[in-house]
Length: 114
Image (cartoon, rainbow, N blue to C red; front, side, top):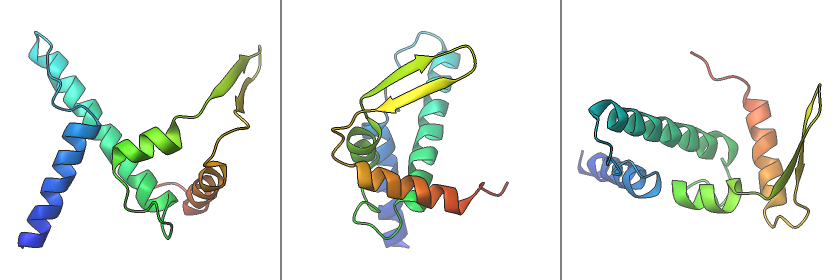
């Protein structure tokens, strides 16, 4: 039981520090509640991304801030035409192979069951 408690405390700390869930500076409670809800959704998405997309790699246990900073912040150019949106990623991205691995793992996993 104690080990599970420590794991939960680490998850709460990661959400508070890495996804700014403690920043509730709005005057209205609804604003703060929405910010906290969005932080919880972001944590859930990043945790699923890490768990499903990075399974079996050295990145499978990284914190959300590391995942966001190193893997998801990619320089890109966006071109919008009348029918398509083109996304050109930077050629100098150091984690390109890991990103491709994560992308293929997520494609293989398919949709998340409801």
